[in-house]
Image (cartoon, rainbow, N blue to C red; front, side, top):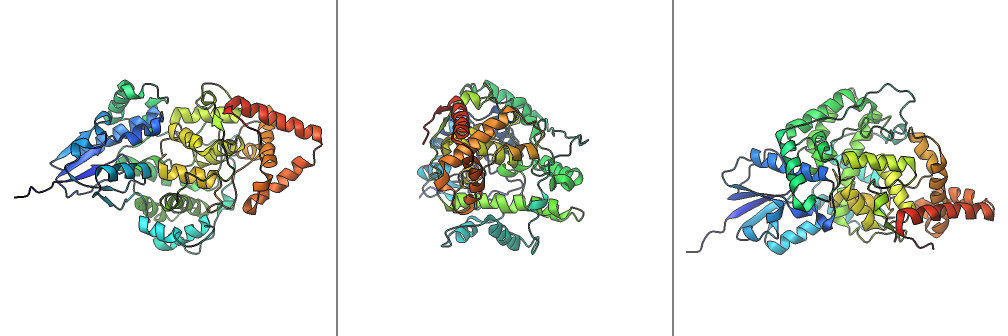
Length: 480
């Protein structure tokens, strides 16, 4: 008589969906190495501890007679579970999917509740024969699917205020200190694989590990902060990292918090100003779903519009040495502490300067994955960096490039000599890539015209300032 093949469900660190009733013989909860040390990245200890804490908590809450927790060192290529028929949630990670299929060719991936749209809906939308996709059009499509904010125009123009000078706003980081947070710190700190990893591991307590904690945190945002989210969405502050942002991308991206629940919760509130409501929903179902859609529909790893080839001198980018640009050094210090910053420092400081320095894509993905890492996964890293930050003309109207004036306008950083360096990098980039400034990117030609009006000596001085900085903070630089 033929032996019945047993069934097993694999739980990865980004599929921690509460309340699921698993119909299988056994559940394996895995410290999958691709979440802890992908490509030998030295991911911040904060994130490693968070994965440990959330996985252990989820395992303990599982109501199943046969369950097994598999630690990092024992996962391997799943040799110990090769006899099972495998099911798992879509991981949105192409490298992990290949690993799973190599070990279990007949495995079955279920639709992930991590997103509002299905994978098939994304593939159908982006499978259209179009040269360019527009994020706003996609947002309108998702609004229609979800039945929210129909015929409500973008309020993005109302969401660009800096914090008022001498404001009296009080900001406080959340704390979710539990025995799981504490155990995870000890586990990661003592693990031989992670001794060289950086990051203030004690900050793992800033991140919720349960559905209850995450939902309570979001409700507090709705009660106390969302009214100011819209006006100050793009503001940057020297001391604070979160400001009026909801700070939920971390539990959202591991499955603890449902995007459908978040959408329903914010739409149920009737007293939210439209610039805050529309701005928040745009981030949740416009930008987030757009990023996932691009990742599953396209190969973004080869995207390199400006042909960047530079490599980082890592001592300047992990807090060991100051670059000499205060806004950059301080924001690096903040992300090394917390493992997080909101979207404007990511786009207008970090991705902006990586573009100006002409750093190759994989170096930038590595830097974000290691340090601005708490909500970082391949589906959002490659789409946000390659398509958005590094300007893939198929998906974005223009690259995110700014001189120092915009950073001064949106922050409380003071004007100083660093502005000359940043501006020099900005003008050098435009000068070197004049031929690439086409379509939407042609908006920067007026900035280039300002540079070209200068005499030869002034231009030479600006270019030399830029080259000196580039040679300092990158490993190798070729001026072309």
